[in-house]
Image 1: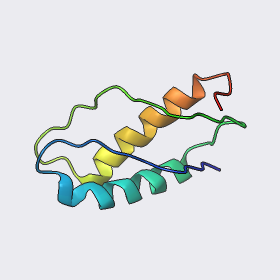
Image 2 (image 1 turned 180 degrees about the horizontal axis):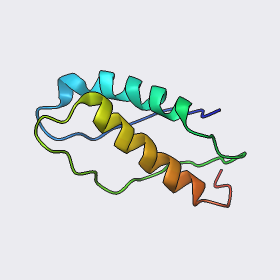
Image 3 (image 1 turned 90 degrees about the vertical axis):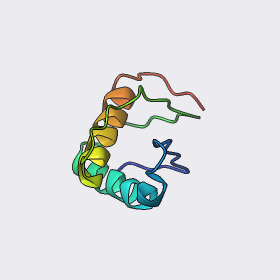
Length: 80
């Protein structure tokens, strides 16, 4: 199971009103992906994700969730 104490998204200007919905959908998308083993990270920075005009919140969330899963999956050490 994925567990986060805090999720901070930095979105382009104009997306502020969509942040809550995108964050909720990131959680939904992660729930569909296999969770890593016992990994503790103080923080995780992701590379920027390209968003085209008209991209839905679900599509954005899916890209973010996959990026999180790839980044955490590639992390073999605990970083408390």
